[in-house]
Amino acid sequence: MTFCNDYHFLEGVRIISFVITALRIIIPILLIGFGSYDFIQTVANPDKFAMKDKAKSFVFRLVSAFMIFMLPTLINLVFSVLTNFGGQLLVLDDCLKNANKGYIDQLKNITKQKLLEYETQNKVTTGKYNKDRYKKHISSSSGGSANINGGDMVQIAASLWQQVASGNYSYGGTSIPPSGSTIDCSSFVSWIIYEYGYDDFQGYQHITQQFVSEDWNAKYGWEEIPVAAGEDVTSKLQPGDILVRDSGNNDGHMNITVSVEANGDVMAYDCGSAKNWQNSGGNPIAKNNFAKNDSRPGKIIRVTKPA
Image 1 (cartoon, rainbow, N blue to C red):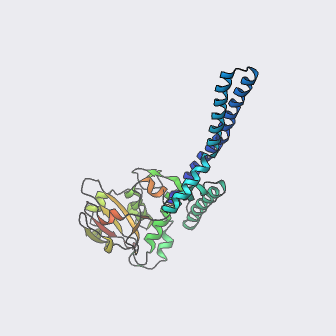
Image 2 (image 1 turned 120 degrees about the horizontal axis):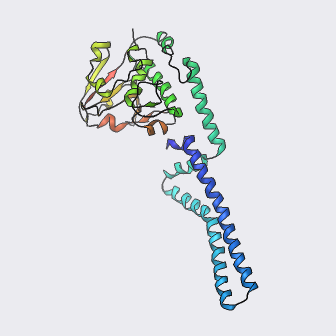
Image 3 (image 1 turned 90 degrees about the vertical axis):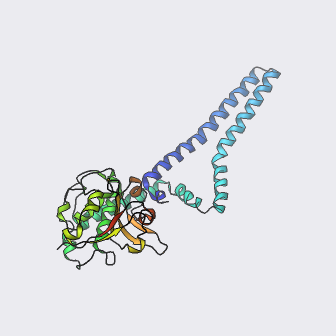
């Protein structure tokens, strides 16, 4: 679960843990205090029936205080036993262990460092639109398809994915970043294509229906592979491929392929929802259903380097 390495999530877990710890101390103290008060009252005003009731109340409060104090320990004991039978729960255990200030600060520094490296390498300042940030990199690269060995198209997508995953964006349609603070699947792909060197995409989000209906081969010479509704295209996908599906009512979706793993997982950069990049830890995510059994037709688009 990648959210166990998301410092926003871990900060929330840390706060909850602090509150539980505080209650674990405060509530037993209050219970013991009230019980002691009852005991003192009973001694000061002896009455055998009252003493019996007060004694029961005092014992009950002592037991309650002990149980509340020991509850986290009991929960941890049960949890440790369960992890022996279900390995998946070990991930949750990692979440609890990672929810400390030192680890959270480390994650924050890593995120800041990645963003700084992105800005330095591509000569950008966050929030400013610099159309030349990738031109030098592209002109020095070899020509041909973006898909050869996961070439520049994937590298650019990875850099932009890191920027989105840094927490600067929320989900929503927009003109391509960084002119706005929201992003969705098609604006992200449009942004990648612009940064790849196609100035026609500057500030302009192409929606999924446009990606499906446009003849990109005639316009730019890009390769297009038709995709039928429900078709499994795993064997056709290459790194850098754009997979887009839309039934014609702008109800579509698209992403950019990073790799097809030996186990059949199709890894992609996919801005179809905010949780995709928020939970990614900056890594590609598996989008198997979209590649293998989505009910919408579409196409695979292979973008080549601009002339």
